[in-house]
Image (spheres, rainbow, N blue to C red):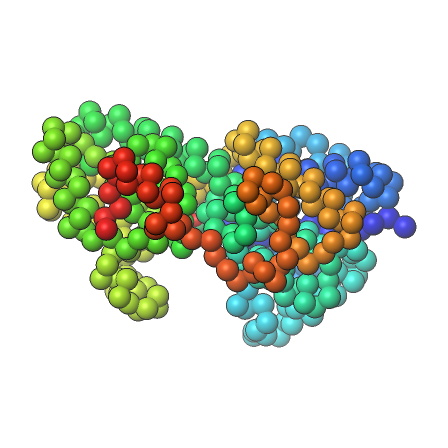
Length: 360
Ligand code: F6P
């Protein structure tokens, strides 16, 4: 009997998903024997599991995808908080997912995703399914792992964006603000900010004081530097907003016609300094395209490690890198937790010791 291994990619895509899928498949074929394994591709994440959208894949499906961005399986956002809610369509999503697992005669299910995906993975493990998670996200905010695949590629892309802003900012003596993805955590912004030599870095973990930001810019101007670069995480908020609950903050923003704080920061800085200030939002460019060499290697290591977990039948776990070593965590130990940037930690201190302002 062939071991039937279901695999899905869920949530926002990122570079390295295909490299991970390839790593898992090739390692399963190698370690268990190609004749003993059937990989079952579940389409469009948990949506496919709910609606029994699955295909038996051929070994050739996993060739030529190492360098390919996106996901050959398709993905969809399927919010965890709605998983146990039966809506107007009367669909019991958890029951359907259990049934698809059974109908497809799966021995285990691999879930490639971020924080939301991992919460549902734990839910399915609690339902008795054999689940193994794999940590993907450009946000690098999955608890219990040093790094997630997709993150380093996004750092490279965001750094390139900042580099390009540098030359035009310097030529025009302007302030250029680069808004970088990361709603809850500022990993991408702080890393790209350091790599791109940003003068100010604003992240959700450190609410900013706009006066401190303009002070930092003025200090640069007074020292003869006519331009400045600011890296802002999309989830950054100021010290006034920090006093509000998340919902109140969202309402205040929507009343003001704002999604992120970036444009407001630009107008405030321009008003305070008189320097021409512009905004650049690379947005989904940060998630697109081919994975970097680092992410191809990481994704492959994670994928191969997942295959060893399958071989050893160690389920209810998610692959991780801890102190540079590939290992795994129990889903119950990480699901529902977020890995934030430590405002007192080394990455922030490194930047601060260079003179970078965090607006605090
Ligand atoms: O989780 C990855 C991420 O790119 C976040 O950085 C960003 O806030 C979010 O996804 C954007 O989601 P969507 O692609 O659904 O707009």
